[in-house]
Image (cartoon, rainbow, N blue to C red; front, top):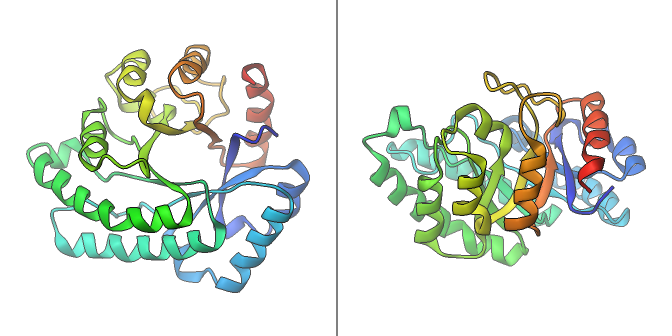
Length: 255
């Protein structure tokens, strides 16, 4: 497997799939749900980290996101989000990931008139975690979710202006929610991209299909990646081994 390609693996399924991961040489993007953060142990995670390192495999982390918001207007929600990210960084100190992918928490429907305070809260939140990311040697990458266009993400990255905080471009979310074209998004955000999330859909639901099985133009996407973000990590977000295998077959034409 190309060393720049990772694949989504929930932490709660990591150990049971370790033989498959090692055999197929899959660089995992380990997803820590809230349940995973409450149940992982230093000993077991250290064992997984050692197995992956001994096999020469790299890791990334996808942080918990359900109900969390680093820029929340409610301080209690920010405190809960901070607690979860403290746990994420405890895991990161063991795994030494290349990247930690995070959700920004902005929803234009709910926060449309409160974007400025959301941004100010987000800036303070991420500035507290960036020194820890730098110490670990990893990058925090903020993923697009509901964004119709990238200005809120750009404003956050430019306000902090730290190479340890960058962008994870999720093409499936872009296809569902964005009104900005691929070329325009890459022109504005390509230089900030540390990671690309790869999955397909038909524009209505987050199907997480293997690339090439929905309606996204991956020929255009990969041309833009090579032009604007040639060093970005590619992560396949398939939610079953069967879909992962189809995605790995479909991506060969772009390697």
